[in-house]
Image 1 (cartoon, one colour):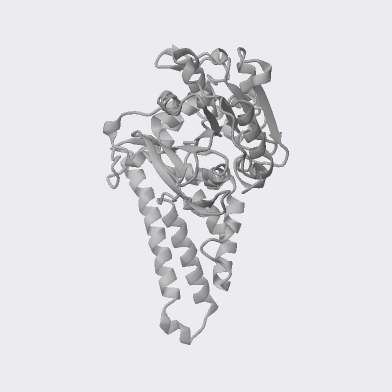
Image 2 (cartoon, helix red, strand yellow):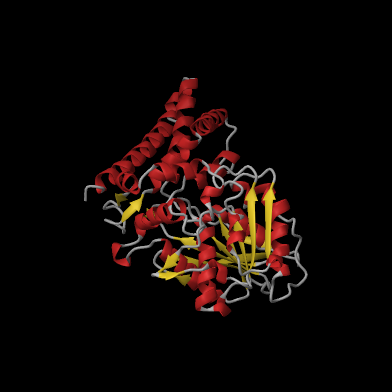
Length: 422
């Protein structure tokens, strides 16, 4: 119970700031004040508008916003999001384009469970929809999962991926983005021994910490300098009474967000000051660059405590994946058992979270895989976000990934849509 107090205090502070923003926005727009124009009141209303939106977004799960897409027939087709598999800690989603023949390329996007929702991959999904049947892992906010659902650590995450791959069949192509890359590799190796026929056709690992020690960053340095006891004492809290997961131990999203923001505090401060100025001048809009980015960036989810702690300990501190010493339910997972799943790594030369060298380390672990089944790419100007979204992904990385999928497909794709389409 002692950890519920700080959890509820954080939520209280967030709620109070949202209320202060709404109050300032309303006060600054009070009709009677229009008779005595004052720049201070205009700025107050602008500050209130930005503040209310900022703190409201922190507890709001963003929508996917993918309503339709234009197909080769020149018509707009409805995109329907369906839950293919539903599990306590995450679902398997399918983005089905109605009225369009199924695409032979079947892609499973493995989204990170690292503080943000799977909607962080929205632009990645949109860019793949013209050419692929797209499936996504949609992880749930731990604060909404009752304690009765049990634990969820890195082994459970791996077994979820195993189940998803089995359900989609051997013709699926898995693309694991950032944090889940090591566990997607482990899940594939698990299948190589337990159910070889259920292995995916290919595995693309994008910016993941396969070997965190290969190229240290601030993230890896943090993992080495703090003890597990320190992390458990300072980062882990119990969900308060407001949510269904009351009493569950979590790494709170609001605490994670504070860490994210502190890494680039000056840049974020300048962005919000500039946005307040733009609102005061009437130059901002609901979907301007600032709101489009921060509506997603500020939306954070609680992470199960056991998943966070086991990730730090086993993936970063002990480097079990890099040492090929990972196990699931007491059974060793040998990455060298992967012999016929093509594997490609993608890294960004300017990635300051998972630096170049960390992800490509996967290829050295694949001792049983022929060299012609291995590939790697380093995108020269891309940072961490750019390797799966934005111009670098659309123009350079995405076409390479689709070519890799085609080269290792059991089904030959039909004539593809324009691969440089956004």
